[in-house]
Image: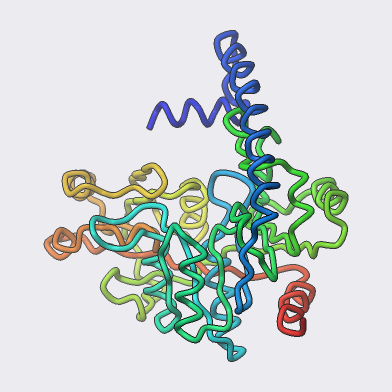
Length: 348
């Protein structure tokens, strides 16, 4: 984890000094090579694209880190289902929890119920499976880098608090592909805009790269808390009165989670932060519970993404309640433009 943090600080220009400067030069050279390789692969794939017989809506990003892509997938899936579409979500599934599904797909499946979540690194095969299930729409999770798939709508989520990092490609920066490829997007969703509204200069930069794309702003709104075994029953507003909580998260942006919880008025006594997609070995969870008890913590609060990975037997035996923080994405600016562009997919 310290090594990953050091590399991230280099990639975002937070590391200073002579050794860091030398490493940045090396990383810059590597990023040029990476950029050329990515561009070559993109052009090769564009000539061999698979065209599905259903509508394919891609939700992706251009950077590493948490851009709020998964809540956007959930938002879209609910919206389309409510409009009568037969929707499936296709995802690679970054990591698997033991023998079960990966964390984000498991969370989506738990929350969406009747909407199938198909996990397969081979997206073409997964889309065909969705079509066999009589789905008329596939939401391609993390699809911006899926150049072999022809998409009917390309949605790119961008973190308003850190849009492009230092605007450098990996490994010098956090860009997964060149900025000019944003011209292929149909919609930009600027997430976390409630925390930091996107600057006008940044929106002008996007409009210059892609003048035809719709630019919207979204927030991740707290929807409440629920006990880990009762996801359908939100806790009353006074549940945390007089209680101190411990936060547990293994997500790309733990600071955003902590800020959101503090904004809800909770008193935080401990905060355990782990790398994104953390698997939570049994011993780690045991140590968290022990440390929380030692500090007289009343409740453990975690994210929905982390909740699906916690060891169920240890949770059952824990004397501390484990509460999950529910978040929902809301379009807070230019929602009409977003929905109009989405509906055009089905008029084509």
